[in-house]
Image (cartoon, rainbow, N blue to C red):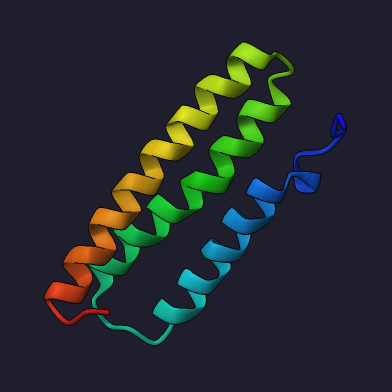
Length: 88
């Protein structure tokens, strides 16, 4: 099945939900630098998926999926550290 919109992609839907969950979780937190960095990281996941899709070529889409995967690793690192220092 070929999708016409990035919003139809399950991977984008899940990344957008993750972003929403992170933003809601950190709304009341006061660790501003940490929450800013984590928020930007998680937002870049869904943004890269969308941008790659909109580029219109498989090669570009794959490249941006790789960027999104990198942001997933960055997010995992940040959440691990956040847990260790009791921010999360």
